[in-house]
Image (tube, rainbow, N blue to C red):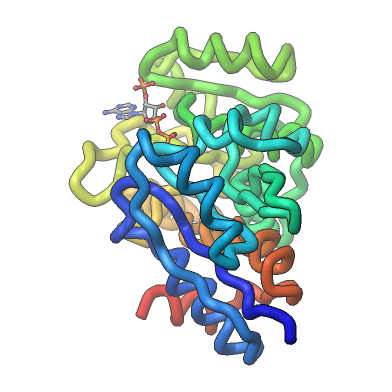
Length: 275
Ligand code: ATR
């Protein structure tokens, strides 16, 4: 008899994670054996947890804050995209306990964008990215991979944007945060990777006066689903894509590896996670 596969999401804190709802919904929808739970893991326990989970029937884990960078040191094999991003969000345990680390955040980002804005052509113009944290790294790698000719990067702390340019190369053009409102007139797509606009955080105050209706606007913030940035962009006639889809799509490769079925991301999936 084959064992029923187990997977979970690890982080600290973890109670807010939507991943158990997402994977639980897919398991039910496809009538697959298996379970997906969440586990709060303190930094000091990370290695021990990763070594013992496979012994308990776990085939993999999703990784969230604060462990995404630290898990790499325990991985036996790391995908190129996880290496480039410098973090992993999806670990698969091989039968012999070896750890395979991947980062599907960029995949989730680009899949969400393509699904929400099917007419968007990444090669048609520069991509404008706000923010230079961990999420921005995944977004930049995905945009470059998709063929964006130039990535205009802006961050409140300019030095962090410069550091990303040093890592990812000349296709990135750094502009000052105060000039961002002017730079965005060239953008084919605009991406907010900062926490601005999130419930409880400061507002996204960059002027959008120069935004063209042809620019696709997406936010990685999904609480609220319609951020002030998306609402303003929509009023200007832009196609907008909310951030929930990125979370849903990033879960696809892990689910497929662990439970053997490539799951759909559709309206039913969204509603199940929002319920
Ligand atoms: P993540 O890993 O989710 O990207 P992070 O590494 O903490 O999170 O990055 C948060 C991003 O939001 C950063 O780009 C940060 O800008 P700084 O590098 O200047 O800190 C941005 N951010 C957070 N609060 C901000 C604010 N009030 N104004 C502008 N940018 C802000």
